[in-house]
Length: 343
Image 1 (cartoon, rainbow, N blue to C red):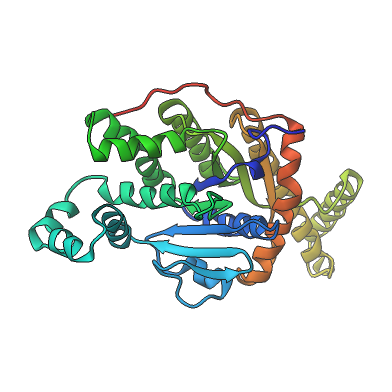
Image 2 (image 1 turned 45 degrees about the vertical axis):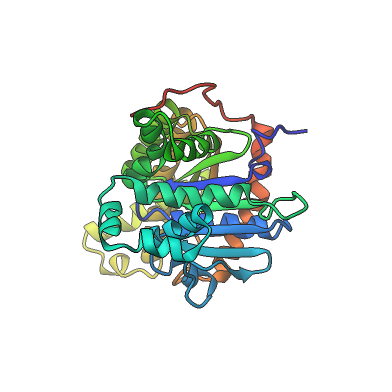
């Protein structure tokens, strides 16, 4: 039987990060859908963005109010203002007191200039949903999935609790930051999934992000998801035949044979060679990830659709549901048992 560390579906709190434009939100949404279709009550959280989840699920205006976007799957767009209001009301309990304090112009202006406060309250809202319980003590949510900011801001976002606990040694903010930090560093509950493309810059950024979150933050990396991977279409013998046929046509065209230059198979041969070159290039970067990322690698195929739709999200969700449990058979990722808190 796999351990909680090796089977991602055994954990409850997930963050997705990666270089901008690699499909981070798409894979976070697909993973959330795969959890929901396992019968788990799942909350997908996006942070202060405009309507990405709404467009993927065809839902009307996902905002700061939690709403169901598919069976067992709920979504919310967390804004700093809404998270602050919700957090303050949990502490102050009375709306009139909240308005008198937090909607005061001077207090509001002061809060806006505190570095990292926005990130802390959004992480705090995620933490609240992780520990949220029904009156009988059962968890309200089986899975909480956060579409975290892209790499640069993502590092700042994840670093905030450790920065605060490094600067402040007591009080409400310290206690809140410490609870969030404990959650982020707990490999039994938490996994940070790194999304990338099998290309030079995304792979290098992914490796750097994996190194920083492990060594400086102690956040457990669940897996690396390589998005938009081209599947090989031709075996070795077929590829050799394609190269030979292409070279022969090219040689005849270079000798002035107009029929070779306009031959109907020419476009096919060039497309096949391009596909083979793309596959080879991606495999080189996938090998780099296997060797250096120190985390299981999940390859997500490239889906040839005009635009991302719910049907495609469902296809990816089905793929993840078949691939992720198999990671436990390949060995758990090596997690650092301890880490220094920065700040």
